[in-house]
Image (cartoon, rainbow, N blue to C red):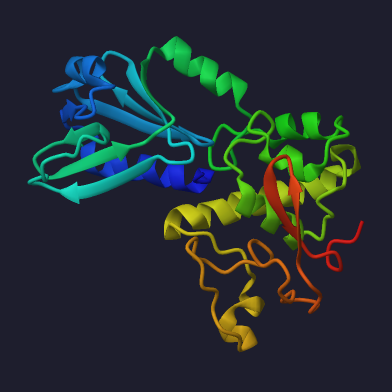
Length: 269
C-alpha cells in the first residue's frame, strides 16, 4: 500500500495537470459512471491529501474521494489519450493530459460534510500544514500498545506506513516493542520532526530514502540497495543482513499482520 508521501505527490500531480481546467470525466469500467457524468466539464479547483486519502475538489463543493488500497494504480500521460481499457475506474482528460485510476479500494463522490468526517477520523498527517503532533502524542502517551503498532494506526498518525515506521524507529534507536507510554515527549518531538523531513523528501523525490549522508553507499563504499521500492534504508526489507551501523543482524517479525524490521543492537529494549 502506498505511504502518505505518494498520495501527497499524486495530489500535486493532479493539480499540476488539471487544476483550473474542466476535464472530461469518464468511467470506462462503469463503476463510477453516474458520478463521472455529473462531473465532466466541471472545473477542478483543489486537490489535497490526508494520510493515504486523496481528494479531488470540483466546483460546487463536490469531491472525489480516492483510497488506493493495496492494488490501486494511477497513470498520467499526455494527450491524445489512448483508448482506455475496461479496468479504468476513473479517467480525467483535458487538452494536454490524461490520468487513469485502476483498482482503488475507494473511488466515490462525497459531500463536504462526508469529507470532513473522513478528516475527523484520521490522525495528524506530518505532511499537512494543519497537523498538530500533540494530538497524536496524547493518544500515544496513554497507550500500552507498542509504538510500532501505534505508528501504523491511521487514527493516531496518518500517512505513515511500514517503511517509514521501521526507519524512523531505527533512526532514533527506539525498540519497536516499547509501549506508547514509554515514549517521552522529547522522543516524540524528535520522531515527528524526522517524519516531517523524511516524508517531504519522499514527496520531492518520489521515493523513500532514510539513510543519513554518512551512511549512503558512496560514503560507506557499499553497493546500492536493489529493491522494487527503491531508496536507501537502514532496516526495511533487510532481514538477516548486516546493520549498516553496528554490523549486527537485522531481524524481522510479524506485528499486527505486517512485517516489522529492526536492529536489536541499535534499538535496545
